[in-house]
Length: 251
Image 1 (cartoon, rainbow, N blue to C red):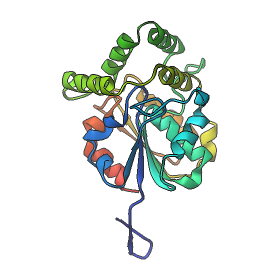
Image 2 (cartoon, one colour):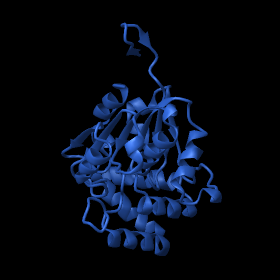
Image 3 (cartoon, helix red, strand yellow):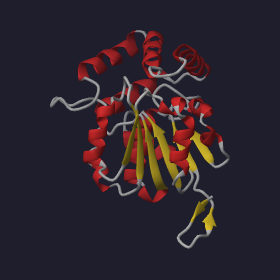
């Protein structure tokens, strides 16, 4: 429950949880607030057993429209990594559907521009894309290894993630399209018109979305509340699930 302007309580809004590239909604099982009755955990297109539609392609807006079709009419949107980018696009195209945003390990622009801005170097990303085509299993293993940096028990977390991926593997077409979205999307300009409240949670040891993206948020979403968890990696909700839950429920 949350308290209204005159002290009366009203039901907390639903929450929509969007996972990252190559993963599934099972990733949220360790976050108590994500398992509550009012939480809606959506699998991205072609992920976690949700069917892939070729017409979605690598169009971020079409992906956003697809998840909107399965979401409550009004909710707090929680997005991790690619899911965070998708939540930003939802807020851009359908702000009336968004109570607030909670963005975890996410960035408005995943790949750095040629001006040396914050993000993954284009050549490194290109090698990752090529690796997916040549050896998808090995590429996913390396990706999982990067994600668990900062975890208290990295080996156990790595095994759990690998098992989760094996239980509900993403479709190859969805993986390829998702990488193309991460490569090409730049939400900085589009976020200027987004007036929904937002909280951003970054990991100080994140090897995928470096904490310097805080500067991008300062430029693109100056009203967003940005927190960097010093010891966390790309999955701060695993290192600090209760703190993440508090931030989500504070809306």
